[in-house]
Length: 451
Ligand code: UDP
Image: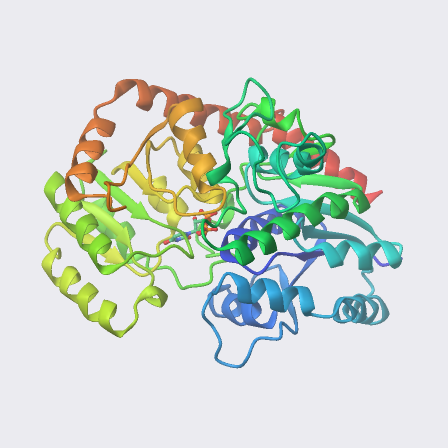
């Protein structure tokens, strides 16, 4: 046995999965455990450009089957490639580490979606923990899919049989079938692929000794109670790694922080839509015009990878037009932005990480979901926790400048929402502070894997 316990962490290859597992890894390292972070070549190449050289996390890669230069995130491509990547690579990696490193692998922590990692760990006699990076309500739905099929509520393709509204329990928001994470209207191949993928997760987690998630008990106890054995250890935040850009696929533009310093307290609209969502030209224009109409300063993240040639020219036009009223960056240090006193509200696509970050910083949200679990996260934000409002598209599917302007103005003067947001912020902080629920869960997990 080596001198230091050593854990292998393996994320699903997407930004919203890598970021929380990287935060978890840092917490693990802080407890005297060595962490090797295993990602695909494609993701590893991105991480190595943004990670600080003195990071305590060791990055290694395994082949991902993507062509050189194929660095566009296409939702199906990484999934297909990743699933095809031979688990043998992972097994070889563990064997190599165990041969050459004094610190032998004592545990594999993998994203729930990385099924084959659990199979490999089990065959090698290594204990494993599954990590769920999205919300508890989504995991509850995933776990209940076999029962929903058995009860004749959905079919084996994940399509509802009778009702479009599915209640997992009377006390938590119902799922609209159109909001299922595997729902892709008009794209049955995509829907089927996602549903089968999700369905398989049920079997995967049975191989694991622990099931961790990025949430906290007080936030959603009712959904968490539907998932046997779940261990909430969130909200996972950067904490003392705030400056270290951990787990980002793109370099963060920190100039927005000094720009925020110059804005009045509680005045800035922050608009950011995660790592995959994008808009067409008309929607970009409406958003720009809506932000301008408010007369408030705004910080807007527009990722460089979304712009094809035509869009790129158009966005340059927007950039120069709004130069006086707002700031556009390619990628922001989001947690630092949300924690900044100048921020008034967060226009968000409701990805789970962004949802938790908004909650943890007490910032009211304006919800603009795009796909997968984001619609259900929006229901939680608007109807369950009451810390935000939803943006509604018009009959052509466009969220208009008037809708954006009106909702922002309604949101920032709503004292009820502000009070709820501050309450959740306190609850989040308490859960990860000594004696809090997630704090205790994490400490206990660490003790267990060490022994
Ligand atoms: N993020 C960031 N800078 C940005 C935009 C996003 O650091 O400019 C981070 C954000 O803090 C979050 C992650 O990217 O941790 C996005 O994850 P989320 O689950 O919200 O959305 P996804 O990208 O998976 O759709």
